[in-house]
Image (tube, rainbow, N blue to C red; front, top):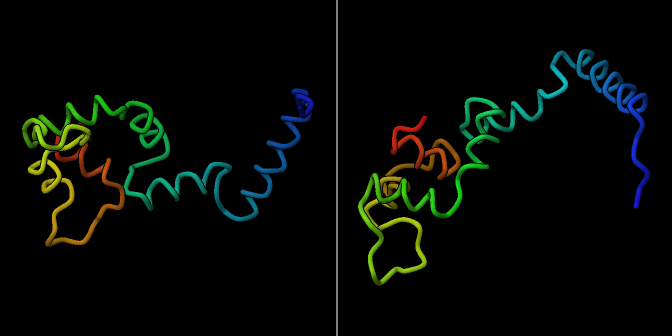
Length: 110
């Protein structure tokens, strides 16, 4: 097991990252923010908040809100056919990227 870093080592690592980011014209967490925006989230904090909350039961509840209950012949599915059609429309390109974002927007959560 690797040894735990000391607070002084952590400060030095953060200072190096901050200097490297400043030279690149961004922030220490700029790459994370860029990735979150590319996926369709507003920022990394929103992405982390919703990824923690989106358990299977919560996704099933949101799916029932927007498209009704899951059909009996699809017992392990999280979304009904109607909810899946709302979240993943066949005639449109998938944007923004992540199906979780489309589900939350359809349910009016973000």
